[in-house]
Structure formats: structure tokens, C-alpha cells
Image 1 (cartoon, rainbow, N blue to C red):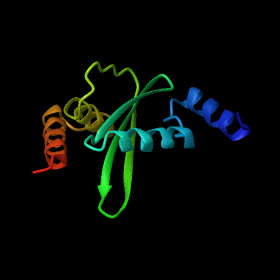
Image 2 (cartoon, rainbow, N blue to C red):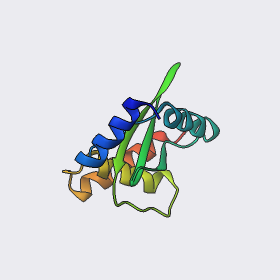
Image 3 (cartoon, one colour):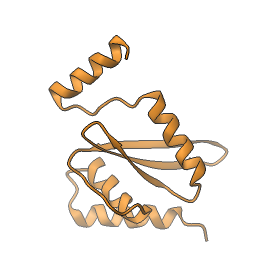
Image 4 (cartoon, helix red, strand yellow):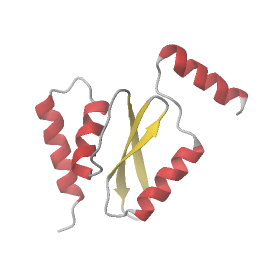
Length: 114
């Protein structure tokens, strides 16, 4: 562990800030989505919480991965539908539940191939 990584971990522990995304984490996300090309959302356990990752295809360019972190979230369902709702709820905590559910439904529907 480098000094910068230790400092980031300490900052996270003290302030409750979002933990850093390591290159290993980023590589793991890319590899997971490459092995699951039909999926748009992933949940990955993290430092005292759950990373929620949304894959946004960019056509011919590399995909973009939007990550948000949720503490105290437990999920037993590993589907885009369930994870989309968790992702939107964590990314936009001020949104009312109806807006979160609507955005999640739209994101999953948009990800389906006709």
C-alpha cells in the first residue's frame, strides 16, 4: 500500500468520504462487463459498503463506467432492474422514490436491444 493509498483510506475512515476507486477495481469492472455484455449495472462489495456501477456504452468509443457508493445497502438480487434502482437511489439521494424508480425503469428499458 502506497502512502497516497493509506492517506486516502484514512481520509475515508475519518470523513466518511467515498473511498477511492483503485486501478484494480476499475480493471475488475471492465472485465466483469466484458464477460456480461448484456448487463448495464453491477454491484461490487467495497470498503464498508457497496459500489454500484453503471455501464454507459459510447458506440465505437470505450464504455464509460459511472460509479456511486452506498453504505448500509444490501442486495440479494443481481439483476439490472434491481441494481438500477439502487444506483439511482445512491447517485441521487434527494430524489423521491417515484423518480428513482422511473429513472431506473427507463435506464433498463433503454439498455434492451429491440
